[in-house]
Image (cartoon, rainbow, N blue to C red; front, top):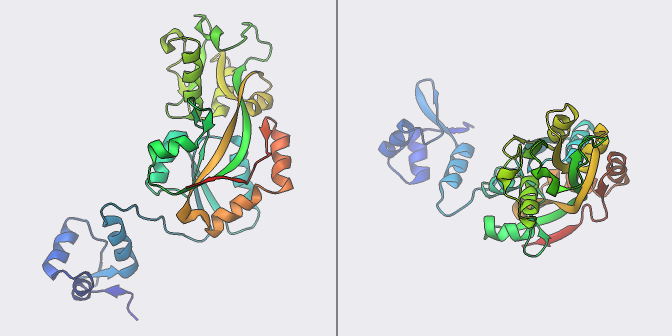
Length: 299
């Protein structure tokens, strides 16, 4: 059986005349291929094109066996677990895109990923992540699953030669700060602490200098390119750097309900409930797995 429809068959399928079909091809809006000089149309691709063309509707990311797309906040333990799942012999091929928490929400809204990691703090009520769903992706059904709790703080040189005690010391002109990228939960956390202390960001040398991961923050300090940056305890301990705690934060996995029962998503979530996962978290340091794998919110 021919998998491709010809122009006449597609015309009947879509309920439009053949002239309109040729117009859509010319505008490069319709998936088509030439077969021995004639246009052919794969029904599966036409159906996806139709779904993506519907007004006031978010297309669903179609499941492909073994594929798991993850975006959002940077986290070393998340990287480690995804890599180990890929090596475990299971048919799972995770792809991780470190975008920052806010950009991860945008990717969820665009249906570009199955999961987004987030640690966004609503300073009005002290709640993590959930309030941002209503403000950034309203009318979007999401399941929030806890990944872990982490310690965020100031990462400094191990011997602390500049005698840094807290965020308030960043106003000293000779202290070089390294920031995380805009839209990341860590950048927003820096802004909140500066605001509480009445410090304008322009008073912090290096505030505009940004990196994309906790590891980059730590390496910048280790190399002597910066004196302090906000990041997680895990990186400070890994690199032998000093750490001044600021707060514990909740790192959650935000999953559209449409994808929650995908085999690949469930395989990943099951891994969070194992003793192996807890052991890895303990070996890295700076994590608390008391709620890991637990559903904490559903809309």
